[in-house]
Amino acid sequence: MAGGKLSARQKMINLMYLVFIAMLALQMSKKVLSAFGKSSEEVVAATKMKTKSNDYLLKTLAQNAKEQPAKYGDKYKIANELQEKTKRFQNYILNLKGDILKQEFNGKIPKHLDYESMDKSSTVDNMFFRNGKETKKAKEFKKTIEDYRNYLLNIKIDDKPLSDEMKKNIEARFNTDAEVHGKKGKRKEPWLMANFEGFPTVSSIFKLDSYVNKGAVTENEILSSMLRGQMASDVSVTNYEPVVALDKSAYFPGEKVTGKVALGRVDSTMSFKKVLINGKPVPEDLLTSGYVHLNLPAGNVGEKEVKGEIVFDENNEDVKLPFTVKYAVIPVPNSAVISADKMNVVYRGVKNPLSISIPGVPDNKISVSAPGLKKVGTGKYIMDVTKYKGKTVQIKVSGKVNGKTVTDSKTFRVKNIPPPVGTVRGESGVVKMPKRNLELSTINATLPDFDFDVNLGVRSFDFKVPGQPTLRVNGTHLDSKAKQLLRRVKRGQNVQIYNIRAYLKGNSGYQIKKVSPVIVEIIN
Image (cartoon, rainbow, N blue to C red):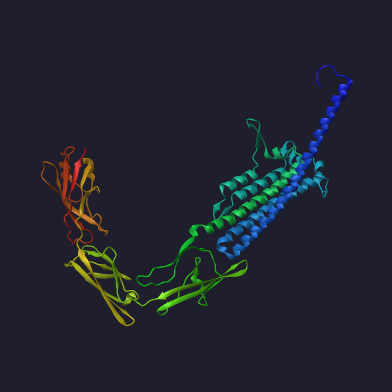
């Protein structure tokens, strides 16, 4: 169609093509405007549904807070504040939308909007921009979005911030950063201009409706996470304890122990409406930390049964959970129970701890006698046999049960503390080290594999180097004379530390057995 001389007929055909193309473009523009309007209606409908969902979630939290205030009380307060902030944000956007429509339709908003006529950009441009700058209304609009976004990002649930994914979604939905354009991203345009300047009114209305929807969606996500997070915490295995239910609470020799082991959920915040045990209410001080604490007299010998009922409130209705526990009361044994806390042996030189009791007999009704025995607590005794010469010692026990005296006794072996082992720098036997390290090292004695915490001290030791007389050293370190001898030792030669004279701290009267020597090989 271009170039050369055109006939009148050809010119007419070209003109018709141009008119046709213009008509197509105009028709396409009208369809786009209608599409924006329909999309806006769909967003408004979706917002209404999401708002109903939010109201239901808030009612659920309110009910949970009423039934379990310790667990849901703080969450409900946060949810109430979130709903208030969201409604305030949405109302601002909706009022702004109303102002735009009033100006678009000369003060009166029609019942049914004609989206194809909302093709001008002047209404929003005049409200938000003047002389190429943002108006006070535009800045207020942007600040409202930013304030709401910052509030959402700072919400904490159970003193924990929102998840990184949720924060990322909030940043994206309510982002007001300048937008970059061009292939290299060097041209920046302010957020308001990039999204509202020069756009048809119907496009701006769609964006405002989208912000109202974003508020409802974000509120829904946070409320849902509150309930999901608490439910996940409730069903976590950390909130469960093993519950062992034996078929009987007492068995005879030769019988098989039968029963069941299950997991029971323990909720420390659970508050019971009331609890009945054997028909009587349980005092409130026994209903703590999610447990019903039993405090009942055992009764006479024989099979017993505890029947109860736990009542709690759920959806304003009483829910009753009955339970039955059986147990047996058995006769009091007529023999004492005596055990050594550190094996069936007592040692000289140390204070041997013992536990002594008679089942069924109070501690203040029990009498115990043995050499060097001293009571230090309920059922707890200390036995010191340092001065005892025998190889065995007998502990006699007696107690009164129902007016009758029960007696028993137990024999323990008496042993001396085993021979200590000499150490240099905490090492025993043959040790390799430089001369300098030996000069600084401490000579000690220790009791390896001994079940008592025994502190040994060293008074002196003999020091022997090759080709030189033995030197007696007082204390736990080489003295100046010993260091002079050490300097004569060549690499690869051995130094002997023996006749280590150790003593028992806190009981110096006890004679420690001979301490094994230490051989030190000089490596440089």
